[in-house]
Length: 325
Image: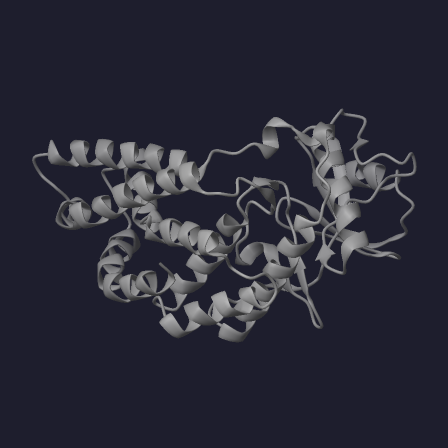
């Protein structure tokens, strides 16, 4: 094992049994279970914020998260001789949620709802008002994305010889851009007129990679984008990924909403928020944005297929949208 990591781990009350390389980190088998060692580039205040939230969550109910481990000095950060800062946190030797498995998807949704319920009970502290927990409102993000769509279309229009991807964009642009405009306008109006302005802590980056399927439970990890906002954005991000994998299967979509509602009831405002989030053609924007910011001389054939698939899925997607409005 590299001496640097040995040096860092020696700062903890851990007996290290085995170490192996993970994704940009080190997975450490210890006498206190599996731990993850990773370089840290954020602020100490951010770490303290997350740790304090985890502490309140533990008191409120049982949920598996990747809580930080303090070193022998009681600190969340450990510094190596070269000045590089490291963190150690609890980890799980389990696989990511399989979005193609409907049962796993519904199991994940239930835990997301339970996470949200616990986070709603976390007492927010004034010292947590950090820049990292203040995020852009969805309507503002939609407006920014719409401007990017317009720039990309203008670029394509001015090209004499267009590629297959560019011809595909010109063929379906109006349909998706109209949805983008309607979603942006609707979300702006919703945010201005909603009765309750109350916001809660959200995970901030909920996808299948951050939901681990344990043998008897589910673990939710990587809270580095946790912020104060609308929890429906968390639900939307995970649901959209699952719905795309299942070609916008209406039965699964309704089952996910019903599963979530059993833990936290969805209000009319929640459903309205979800509707405008789902209405925005986010995957279409991602494909166009990738094209515009990448090497436009060559677009992978898979990206062309994704663009065409979006057209094919439009009717079933619209059916789902009509049910949640």
